[in-house]
Image (cartoon, rainbow, N blue to C red; front, side, top):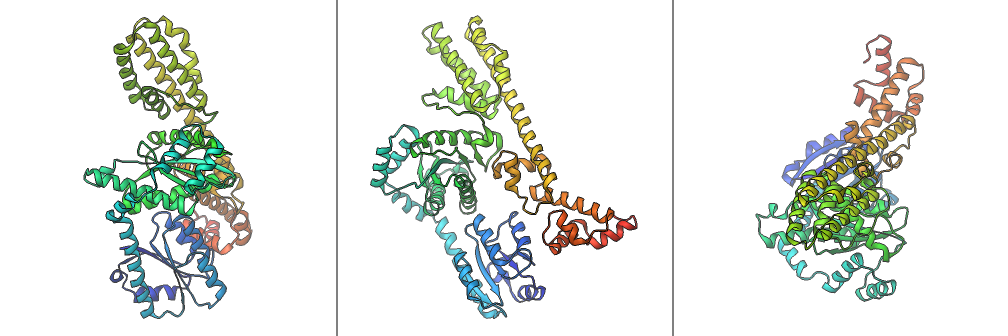
Length: 538
């Protein structure tokens, strides 16, 4: 069954369509019927529909604005515009918003039934196209040439001069327009074998299918370059204007994650590096994207993780690490105490078997301590615990590798715990600042999630998740509650008109304020004021 939304501000129209349509017979489930676009948009956050049938002229948010907003977030929703206005300008704008059909009232139900049947066939064909593993197998055999893949991976892992970049871009017919550039890395969260019964061929096809969706969204629509890495991840090189590059990349990553889960039943996470001003500097943004992806262990699966959300300070180039060193630093960054202790024990046992002298043993330990110092500078956390141990002086007093193992484990755990404590405290400090900002500016009709996220120095995606965890409410729920609390105070304690109160608490439309008030309080503003006078208002 495909999910369908019906939006029309005329009750008779909605009820007439609902009463005369056997949705299930056409393969649809009526997932929601709404009187305005704003309610439909909010409902879509909990479960986006596959098809939207909407009127144009409605209060609070019209059908074209709803179509635009849904299209920005959910790229594959089909929209049917339903209106009684034979206005060609509306039709032209609807076409520009990728509206699927444009129907006039009153509805001819035979035509409406034919439309539903046709849309069901189209949705089936799209799903089959994406889910057809045989098609994915053919696309895998016809994927981009190996030389292009190798060059792009070399571009982000080594130093490539500008002249060679320009020459190779011409040879492969690719480009990044700039002037701002950044890298993203995508990885499948759970083993692909869980969805395929463990068959290697099926796993490869699902990986390719996920990469193919990323290529379609970032490459064909966003102008980015997508390629597979040696460790079976998908890398994206993206460019745009400095002020929009990051936000656009984050939005496309969210669309890709949504489509991959919908069509392939896989959950993925993205790491996003910082913006650079030259293509030749993309390698450092790529390392940051990989580093951001490491924090999936700490933040959970199915995440879009920007490096600026989890680390501060100056990032360092860290090519040439031994494999054990990478694992230790990764465990410290993500706060995995158990993994860190286990890796230390494994490493010390390796040193016992391979070290030719005590001098080389001390040199190896000191090299690791330097890496820990770099991590502390890179993230901005853990310095106090590290310096208190006086590690470079103390290490020379330890006589055996077993003593070093115990001491190094304790030191690493102390740094990890302080990093976690400070990171949590700083995040809460930023969130408290954002909360105060919301309370101070609730009366501004333009107050948005983006403004609050900027105040917290976080990306919108990360702030939204952290604010829900911090306050127990989404940003919209919290802002609405604050506004309505103030509105109740003004209703009970002043003689201000309803429209004046609406304006004072951030609602430009008094009618919409009344709708929201009744939905959340259970009575209209007028009824609440009367109840307050009688001492019955809650």
